Picture 1 (spheres, rainbow, N blue to C red):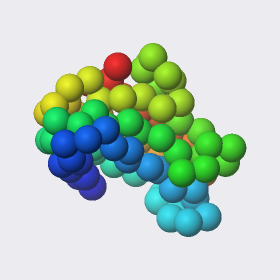
Picture 2: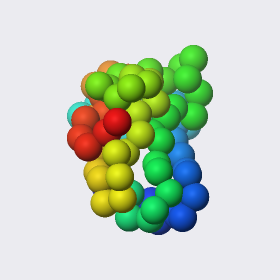
Picture 3: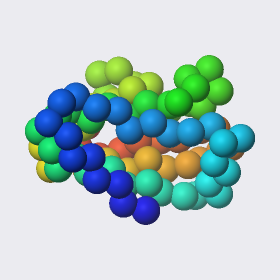
Length: 87
């Protein structure tokens, strides 16, 4: 799946809990920021869904700049790794 974020203001791409959307383990959601507003990738429910990344805020990485992209990889029921052009 490819999700484009086209917004002039800061915005969020939210990963749902497995109870809301049961993506299979191994699913990859690709996110690209095509607007000028910086995109943050975060969990809808941080106490349930875990996000890990090398971003400055590991649980809520931001795409680095316009046209940056990242992949959200589901590795367990409510666990995702985010890799890509993040800050």
